[in-house]
Image (cartoon, rainbow, N blue to C red; front, top):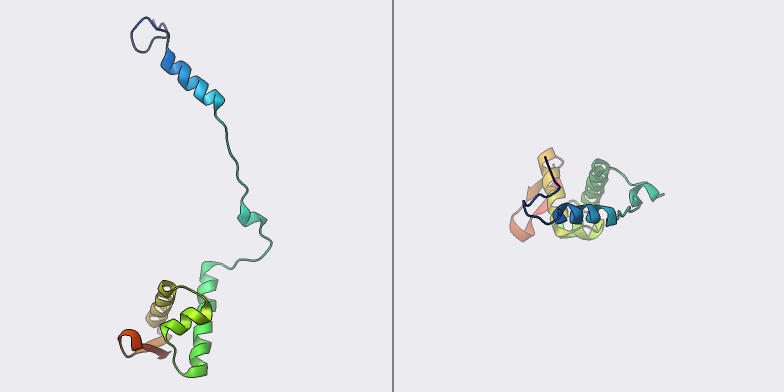
Length: 109
C-alpha cells in the first residue's frame, strides 16, 4: 500500500507537492499570429522566385548581361540570396555564366 512517500522516509511526499504547486502556479502566454493579422498579400516563396527571375531577365535584356552585385542592388537582396538565385537560374537553363571569379557575368542562355 502506498502511503504518499516516494523517497521511502517518514517525510511527506514533498517532491509531488512541489510539482503540483508548480503546475498550479504555472501560467500560459498566447501570442497573436501576426501572419493572420497582416492585411497585405504575401506571395508564396515560389512566386517570389519567379518574380526575381523575371526581374533578372529584364535586367539582362536591358544591358546584355548582369553581374551578381547588380542583382543584389537591383533586387535589394543579400549576396548569398543573389548567388543562390543566379545558380538556380543557371541550373534551369535560363542564364549562362561567362567568365570566372569576380568578373563572372550572366547572359541569356
